[in-house]
Image 1: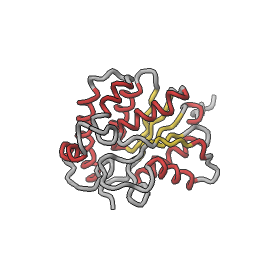
Image 2: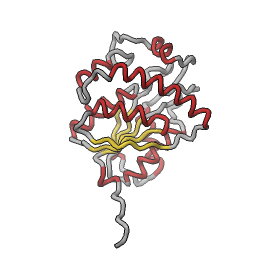
Image 3: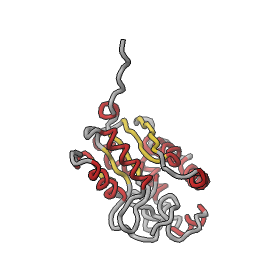
Image 4: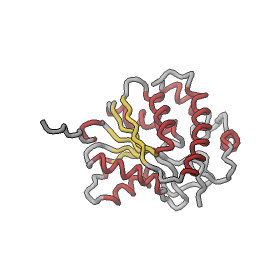
Length: 226
């Protein structure tokens, strides 16, 4: 008996969710985000819908000319002229990973009854993203994480790991008391942060100090932008 062929992503998942990871002042996405998009395009096979998730980070000190999601879609379409633009959905309200999960759920997954997703982000970010999405979506959803190689050096990955630990600790501080899947409570947590509320508990300066990023212009994960 021959080996059983692996089922294509188009039959395994209702949607592929690609997380944004910054867009610079020229509306360009970095190479590590391009790898996330390339993975989604390859797995989708122009069949499974792709949700590109992200406006831009509330930590940056500039306004990009387009959203992370829009920049990712443009890059995806540049990879193949046969790719159906209607298969690529844009989530353009989120300004952090928590927002990625919340707005993906409320804007796309719930309305379409999509319950089984593949979550695509970079290697260094996959642990936090998986935690957040499982907490926000809850037990009614199946989430399969898929890490793409960032291409960072060992030294860069070490610095990323330190930063991710800080952000994950802060995230868990807010989310651990929340019941998984409770969208109302999740939205309440989001209102503590800039970009989601007119009177957030924490300002951009507060968060930069808490996370000890130490540079004035940063993207979502602390990478300086030009």
